[in-house]
Structure formats: C-alpha cells, structure tokens
Amino acid sequence: MSSNLTVEYFIEPDSAALARRAAQEFLGKVQQAVAARGLARIAISGGSTPKAAFQLLANPAEPFLSAMPWDKLQLYWVDERTVPPTDADSNYRMTKESLLDHVPLKPEQIHRMQGELDPEVAAARYESELRNSFRLEGAETPTFDLVALGMGDDGHTASLFPRTQAIHEMGKLVTANHVPQKDTWRITLTWPVINQARSVFFLIGGADKTERLKEVFLGPRDVETLPSQLIWPASGILTLFLDKVAAALLPAPDAEGRGILERVR
Image (cartoon, rainbow, N blue to C red; front, top):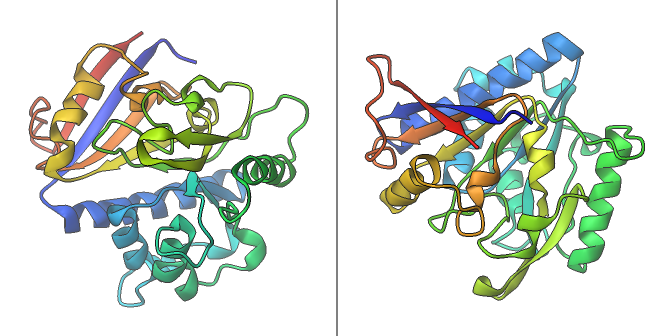
C-alpha cells in the first residue's frame, strides 16, 4: 500500500447535485470496468446520498438507466446492520426499494449480507460469498472495481466504528463488529479489502460532517478515534464527493471545483 495518499475532492452546491454526481460516478466506473474487464464489481453503502443516487440510476426519465450495462454488474455491500432484509434499518432494503426493484439485475448478480443471521455466521458466509464469486485462492483479497463509502459524524466509515475491534482486523475479508456505543453488532468489509479496490470514493454531505471531515483529512492520524483514516487505497488516490456545507473547512478548490490534499503516513 502506498505511503503517500493523494486526496482529490469535488464540491457540489447541495445534496441534490451531490446525488447526481454520485450517480454519474457509479455509471462511469461501471462502464470503465466493463470496457476493461467485461465485468464490474462494486460495493455500496447505505445512507441518504446513495439512496438519492440510486433513485436517479433507476429513473427512466434520466439517462443513467439506459446507459448502465446492467447485465455486466455484480453488486455487493460494504456493510450491513444485524436486521432482516425487510427491516427499515436494512441497507439492503433501502437499495432494493430505491434501485433493485426498478432495474434489470438478476438475483445471481446481487450479493446480499445476511443481517438476519448471527453476526459471526453472517460475516463468515459473506466471506465465503466473496471467495466464491471472485474465485479467490488462499490468502487472496478481492479487488472491487469501486467501493463507495460514507462517513458518520463520529468519523466511522463502513461499520468500522471508533475504538471497536474491527479497526484491528487484518486477516479476514469480512468481520462481525460489536459496536458498544450503539449497543449492536454490524457486519462489515475490513479496511484492507476496501483499500484493495481499484477506485474508492466517499460521499459526504451535511453540516454535521464539517468538523469531522476536517479532522479526518487535515488532522493528525488517529485511527482509533477516526476510523475513516484507515481508508488509504493501494492505488494512492482517494476521491471525495462533498456538498458545500460539509466541505466548508477544507482549503478552497480551484475554479473547476476540484481540491487536492496530500497525506503522508
């Protein structure tokens, strides 16, 4: 993994523009992967911005639906809550209602984390799912074409929460993570798997993220407190798509709305 990281960020005026930019990025990365390898494997996260982006992708009045090579897409999840797929808190349910119910994806293209199972069992099953679908051998790690992340106002990403065991997990692809501060368990991809992806981006919006965003990307390294700092892609490039409010404390971007931060470990 590169010891230097280039963080490029793009600032959109509001949440609607951020969702549209996210939809454009999803489409672009899938098209690139299909052109290069004949297949696109992407891992998605929950949240309001992804939901709005998924609704754009599925909207027949938008250009995305007809442009997406749906038959070449394999869809995975970054993390999941320990609830059934019908539960209102389920990341899968949100994706199903906003995207899957409206697009031509077959069941075998959809790789769901089984949040209704015991967390350890669910994590082990998803690791097996990854090993089988990526045809991994031994200690190989899957290489996603895209991993799309969010960030919580506590600095967590995926279900890598501050001061939880998953921060230290490097041997597994997927882990069950006990989150005492939320009195629950989560299932999550581990950070080495996320960092192996060809492309990784954060979608971050809202005033509640402003201070934390500054701490994560401009402050000292403290992964116990700010697990989002664990995201350090092997490619050496990390992309942020932000709304204007969330980005208020970052250095001003150039005239085209693009900023650059250089991080060294």
